[in-house]
Image 1 (cartoon, rainbow, N blue to C red):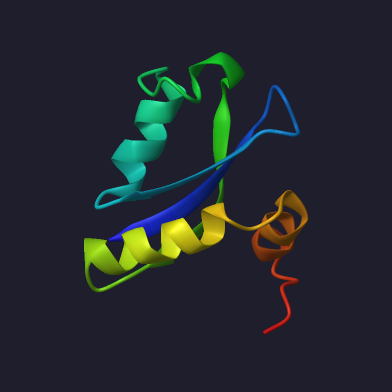
Image 2 (spheres, rainbow, N blue to C red; image 1 turned 180 degrees about the vertical axis):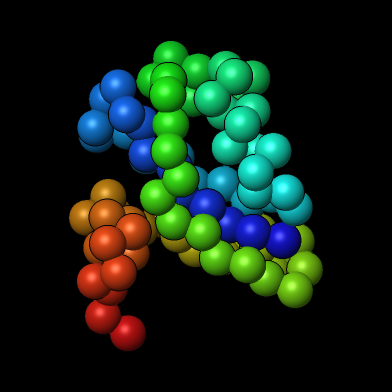
Length: 83
């Protein structure tokens, strides 16, 4: 499983965090407008991704990241998140 954060190229303030078992297909789905929450901010680019042994581990990490502030998510994307 994977967690990912995508960034809108049309609206720089928009981020979306999700979990999936196939990262390439999921990002493609977002860019094809197949996701209700992201279709109005097309196109999207992958900003961050983590891989896990199971999809359940990815879902747990997704829930954790979704609680974070935008600033903390941006730091994660930039690789500047303190441990």
